[in-house]
Length: 302
Length: 291
Image (tube, rainbow over all chains, first blue to last red):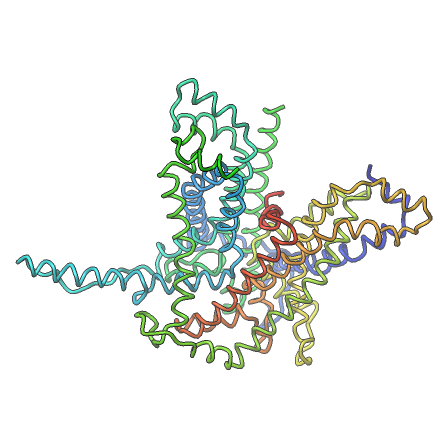
């Protein structure tokens, strides 16, 4: 049983001191100041006055920035959807793998996840850029195909045109899926693994096909895992900075890139602070929705 | 056991043996290629003797020599390791204290503290980075021009802020399996509160301290966004340095440096597995899952 703090005040105080201090002073204070800044105005070059204005939020809702918010939401949603489609069969495969293979398959998925994000993004640049491996292979195939066509007496193919794979929206989505796929697979796996398999067997015995069983038994039963997978993928994808910055072009900027610009280049901290907090609120809304769904699910199960 | 496995192989796949059906296997192979091909090509081409780094020209180690003699790169790498080291130690101590506190006591404001501790885990990195930038610029300016490694203090503080809640989650999971009677027995036998804590509780949670520590170390080594907002011109970490190199061009030198870090990561992961079993793999993830 948990002990009341009054029974051991000194040890309670000792244990409370460092975590509370660190959290309050090095996390809540910084975030609190950003929050206050979002209601402030620039005065001169360095000073910011807290005027309680809503101007920064009003500006964030202008079509230009609202468009970027909508676009970020869309990109994050598409990324999440692709991760779900790609990741679900993987989670299913790991769930039904032999026990001795499971840890190795999990390791296979997790190892890239532990690798430095910057290195993974850089690896994608090397693959996708104009002189990258994909275009290299494509060029070799193209030249050979051209040679083959002349050989059989057809007109050779035209000049080789490399594919534009980098610095566009495609590259951003590709990169985000690449980076976030493990985030999706793990929660899916942990729910699927807890599932009662006799229900699946019953469904198959009673004549339902594999897809029917998947759709009417597995998916509803793993709804909680799917929801948490979606949330865990969606939140970091929405706030992604590095991927759109390095893989995207000028038209694929996401909200985090705009925030960075306000703080590091445009030097409009109050506006950047307002954008940051809009992002934080979106995150909280996502968590709240998931919490509600979770409660509903639990209510149904009980 | 081996006999039965051999026997199973000959029979057609059972209804739920999805892993033995070829579309599933093909899908798994496809995803593996998707996840690993970029990293493996990066590693292979770090040994390629060609400046443009596209066509294979022969084996060389010269880019490793170049990377290892690049002073600013080495400095950045050392900075990263020092930051990760200190941030890990502080995160483990503070995180374990928080975990024990929340596990052991009932106190007013417990739910609030528990909730507040999960915010650093879920809040977008960019927002936390911005917070740190403002904090160290306006409220708590870290003295400029301090001797190394004291000049890394601001980055270490920022890293502890996002690492220690993860450590707390890992340690708390382990505490759930602790038998509280052991603590009472120690006290009955005359041990003081502190002594009970250090001699009975801490040995029990030791594996989770190691796992949490490895997690904090990796998180710190991996972090780019928050460091990017906290780092000054003379406190560049490895990811920040690679970022500035990558912005300009793709060079084999970056490939070589990245390969070294990938190898370090793989070794650390295997250590984590050794200490904690396969749970360590999902430690960080499970933390996020909890919220």
